[in-house]
Length: 251
Image (cartoon, rainbow, N blue to C red; front, top):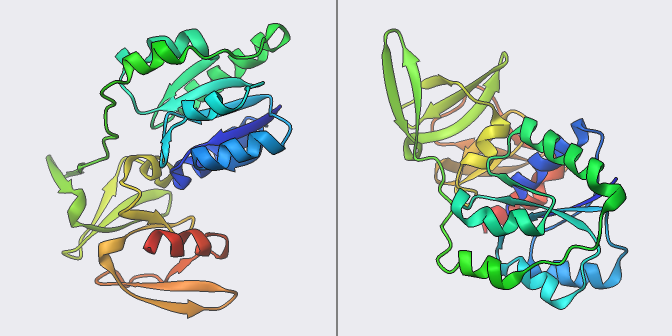
C-alpha cells in the first residue's frame, strides 16, 4: 500500500507516519500545503491512499482536487466536530478525528483494504461539504493539564509549562516555577494536543515552549543545544533530523 499524507502541522504528520509504520503501511510522501499538493499530483503517480487534513495553511484541501483529478482513496483527518462530517462519510473511505486514536486508525486502514478490490476513483461532492464548512471551527488546543498529588487534583495551565519530557516511561511537565509533574499522557499524544506555534518536539524526549527558550547553541554533529530559562536537569538537544524544522518553527 502506497500512502500520501497531506497535513500542514508537521508534528501531526510525523506522528501519523509513525502510527502507520506500526501497521506496516509505507508513507511515500508528506505534503503540507495546497500549492505543494497540486504541484505534486501534477507530476507524480498518485498513491493508493491519501490521509487528508481539511484545513491547510494556505486554504481548504478540497482546492487541490478542484485543480487535479484524484485517483486515490481518501481518509480525512480533521479536528472538525461530528456534525460537519456527514458529507465526508459519503465521499471518502473514512474520517479520523484529531488527535488520532491508534485503534481507529487501524480500523480505517483495514476498511480501506477490504474495499480496495471494488474501489472506484473518488468523486468529492464539494458543494455538500462546503455547506457544512461555511463557519469552520478553529482547532482547539490544550489549555490546561491535571495531575494527581496525594488525594488532590492539581490543574496546570499550559502557559505555565516550560517543557514536557519523558523519563523512566513517564511523561512530565516542567513549569516555570521549577516544579515537575507526572502526566497521564505520552509525548506522541502531546504533539497533537499542543499549539504547534508554541511547542516543538526537539527529540524523542523533549517538547519545548518557544517562550521559555533562553539560548540556542551550536552542538556536535550539526545539532543544536537549547537552553531553557529554568529547566537544567538534562541537556536539551535538537535531533539532527529536526534541526531544519526547528529553525523554521523559530521564525
